Length: 388
Length: 87
Image 1 (tube, each protein chain N blue to C red):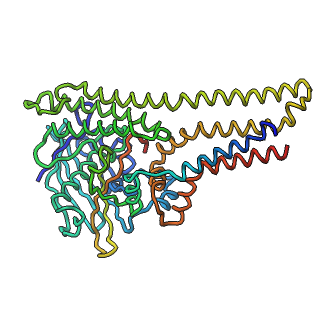
Image 2 (image 1 turned 120 degrees about the horizontal axis):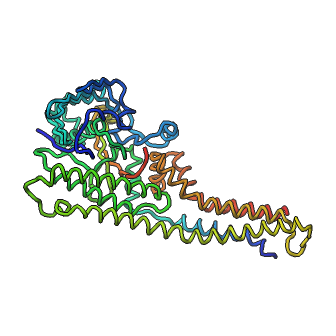
């Protein structure tokens, strides 16, 4: 059995000098030997192929580990990989280990154009219980081929505009190399991302939506290269694949996504900008009046009973205003940088009956932080007035 | 009663308004189902990808010991793949 796919390359040519150079690959490589035509890496950490701890940042990991539910007794894999450059292609061997419990070996041929053929996947031990969560051994092997492809791509793919794990645009297909299948999966991915952009949260999704557009531009460049490499010279044209005929289809999808972002950026910034200008004007007027009264030495008893009361109240007003303004920026940043934590909070907010105590507490805070914040501001304002 | 004395009441009204709105907040069935799956050990099996329509999913593979049998098995994983995030 063989599986085919494509490792993206903008240049249109895979180059050994970029092996292991991407950020994903570099942080997982420990034991590497690189010569003119050989790349050998041992015990590469491939825990990223499991979704259990997804994008865990180091300084956040102690906190996230206590919150995010983990699989008990999970074992993470390591990989030994050897790639040799030959006259017309690269050939390699990959071995995936889960300590002494499981081992999978495969060989692959990688052409300079990025076309990859994975074959001879052997597994040890061959026990039915290993793939009992799959429909059968064949499905398990397909899944394993996809995972092996992600591992090879992480090491070989020199570019770095997103995590290789989330690059679900290119699938591995059993059988012959089918450029139309790969093209179709990539275009569908672009369409899915566009759909997601249009449904993103307008507060914490701001930064993510803009970054997604840049990713789409990256995909577009790959697709253009792929088309030049495999489609333009293809003898057959498949019905329904509009992009094979007209590449501007992609531009249309990306423009549509960009338009959505622009639209909700206008919608979300127009009204707050109006309110903030009005409130800042009021706050500055109060401060100016206090300054004026102080400088002139007048004592407008009927107008202002206590200057400090007005000062503190305007301060509270400005704090509320600032909190409402920076909230979305902070959440956007948090989502962007601390994905695992945000993902936990995202799911917790929708969970009906949390079982763990810490989940219950955090869910309560998450749900009622806004009314409690304004209750606190009301009490603070009341105390300021009372003590004036 | 001066106008300034209404400021705490104004904030209190906002607080009550938010309390009522969050108390009655409801999430879609899709999101509830996903949350349950997320908290059930983080092994998210992709049983029906069509259910999620166009959401992007990653394909993950975990290898863990089963509680009942004590045997190690592979689990299919699928997680919402958020594009556009820094890692």
